[in-house]
Structures are given as structure tokens and as C-alpha cells.
Image 1 (cartoon, rainbow, N blue to C red):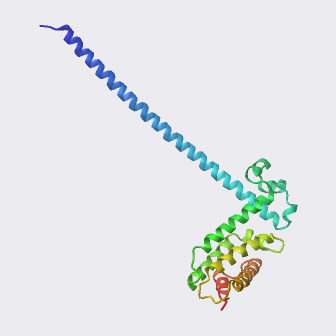
Image 2: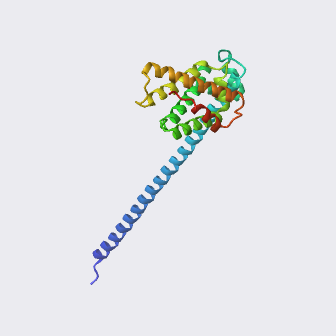
Image 3: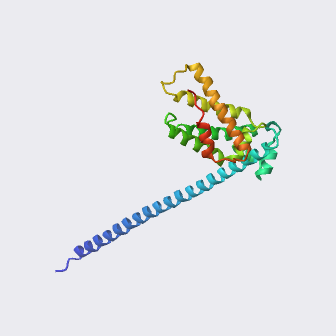
Length: 229
């Protein structure tokens, strides 16, 4: 006997199953689409950020190079933002996005070198002769890689406060790392540190002035040959 209501219920159940399946897949597709969109958005954002970072690094690099170039012939106090921007082919608005004035720009250059100097110094045990020599060689190789900057900042017309900062960092490191076997008192150690570091800096200045006519290894051995007994 035919049961129309039973047949209708079967059809209804089938339709409901289909609707559920469609809704389920629609939800999954929407979820997948949302995930894909989010992934693409993050990828785009990262690409944009990397591009901005590269642009920022480039801008700062050319501004630093421009200032160093100008410092080779002029005193810092006479250098204007306009001159730096003209040399770097950067507009003044962009300059002020990164730095307050030429003094601030020079400060950032010096801070970067001091930070690198500290990094190199703290990687070695200077009580080990071989490590001490390696440290000096690496420092000199670093200075050579930044020849224009270091030669300009350490020459007679350069920023003498930078030379003093370098001396203070190196002298403090030297005194703090001398062993307890050192028979000198603290006061005498400070004089000894000044003697060693001051002499080393002047050797480096002459080396730069002579266009690095000797290899970093040769200068490192010369510097490390000076010892306080």
C-alpha cells in the first residue's frame, strides 16, 4: 500500500541532507577563502614592510654617506640639512623623518660604530694571547670596511669627542678584563690602559692616513706587541 506521507518525509529528509551538505561546504569554502585572503593580506603586508624597511635603510645610508663626505672638507657646525639632502638626493621632509639635525645624524653614526666596537670586544678573552690577536685583527678589518667613516671621524678635523668615546670604551674593557694577577693598583691600571689604548688609536689613525698600506694582521701584531709588565 502506498504511503504518500512516508514518501514525502523521505524527500524532505533528502532535501535537508542536501541543504546541510551545501551549507557545510559553503561554510568550508568561505572559511578557506577567508584563510586564503588573510594569508595573502599578511604576505602583502610583509612585502610592503620589507620594502619600507629597505627604503628606510637606503635613506639612512645615503644620508650618512652624504654627511661623511661633507665632513671631509667642512666642520660639522657649518654643514646644513640642505647640503646633506642635496648630496643625498633626498628631500628635507624625509631627512627630518629620521634625524633632528646634522648633529643628531652624526651621533647616530657614532653610536652604531661604538655598538659594533662593544660587540667585537666582548666576543673574546683578551687574557688568551691568540684570542686577543684575533680580536684586534677583526676590529681592524671592521675599521677597514668602514674606511671613509673612521678616517673622517678620527682625522684632525674630525669629531674629537668620538675619539674620546672610543678610547673610553676600549680602556674600560681593558681594565675590567685584566686578571687578578696584575700587580698594578686601580689608579695605575687606568694610566696603563690610557697608554695602551691611546697608542693603539694613534697607530690606527696613521694606518688610515696611509691608506692602510699594511694588512690588518700586520697592524694587529704591532698593537698586540705592546704589553704592560
